[in-house]
Image (cartoon, rainbow, N blue to C red; front, side, top):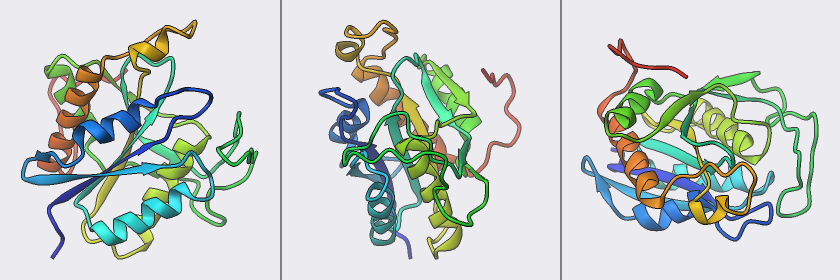
Length: 218
């Protein structure tokens, strides 16, 4: 029988930043309980080779009901619930080991794309109802975030991960990061924690989107 757990994965700082909001979220939410499920935090390196493998190993060890990966998307102003991961790596900057692959697949021979198996519209609507800015996104990029998202979905589709559902959300910079950038959109840590907590609760309460009255897509 699967344990009542949610695996929450984030990333180390990268690209010259001193912090990563997804990493900070792990510290804030790790060990908390949402709808009777313990939040198990996992910090991943910004690394094309190691990040996906570490995540897949953690899924096999943890056997969570839900896996939510969180990554930084500087310049965005809302929580961005990603709908699709593509089988493509095209890195604009190098990873933490100096690797910068371009125009290559995440998984050789894998499908062109995977869709999130989380109820992203319900998650977005729940955030809106609580006053947390949120949107649906159709591009997780082509860097490590997308690669990890794709490897995550490939793993739960091809390995015996019991009833595991998974997805990815991008989050804005924290205010202390945004002040150093021209595109200064940000979100406070309190609001980030509130939104991710609400998203996790919605993912646990609903297995699919169904029909959402008054739901908004951006």
